[in-house]
Length: 230
Image (cartoon, rainbow, N blue to C red):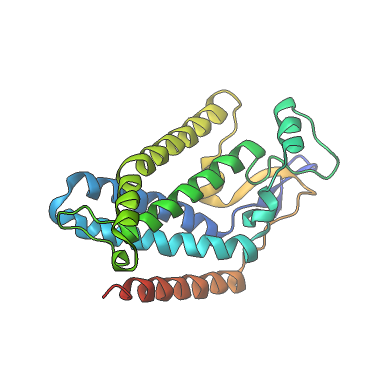
């Protein structure tokens, strides 16, 4: 934490390194998944690989949401209707930090996107396009279930993800252009200029090693799940 010229504010670590790497890696993986699906053919090999990478990242984020830095934990951005109303009205309660990590509106989009991506990965694992692409766990479900999963994966699922991503990008642009708040830079550097009393996220060698171990365990678990279809 570095104090600014104004004694009331300081540069506060909000996003720990594992969270930042997760965020940008997931963005690349989703982009790669979309592009490979649109190309089709031999590119579908990469579509499956991107899907397994997304599976690994989502599993990691689920765990990191409980043991990660303060503002990366789910508990820090579970906001009730009252908090959402206060945020929209510009009101604050003493000790309330609605603009530090994910604000009440942002938290809704985060949960929606994570939920949709989980559904997309899950349906992809059992999907069957009846041409040449079959999910590794397809043999564990009925034909009817596989058909519904495929329909979701190729239709509603992907379009809902596009919509939420578009809203996410639009919100970032709105905050930057209309409110003068840069939401991208903190996700790159990890820091925000905030009231000096704002609690900082723990982001040190120990937490990063824990994150690396969790990521490795998640990758191993995903590899094992995929191998079940072999």
